[in-house]
Amino acid sequence: MFNFFRNSSKKTSLIQLDHLYMNAISKLSVNEKIAYCQRLIESSEYQLAQSCPKKDVPHLKSLITAADEEIHKLRSR
Image 1 (cartoon, rainbow, N blue to C red):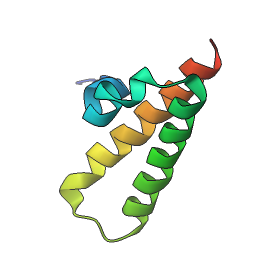
Image 2 (cartoon, one colour):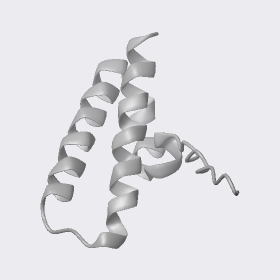
Image 3 (cartoon, rainbow, N blue to C red):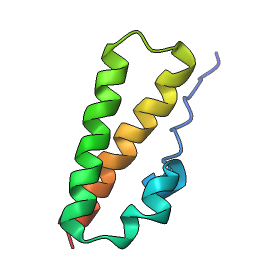
């Protein structure tokens, strides 16, 4: 029959998702960038745990993924 494949979600960088990170945080030191990403992950997870609108869930999950990837990238430098 038919084989259906899920499209792997296109990963979006934190700079593309977060204008504050793009305009200000990205110019700071590595430690400050990592601290910002950690706070962003914590606040996004908190919002997901609360009763946030369903339309916000994909964006919050994308922010968490992008911030986590940014932390890994920054630590590997």
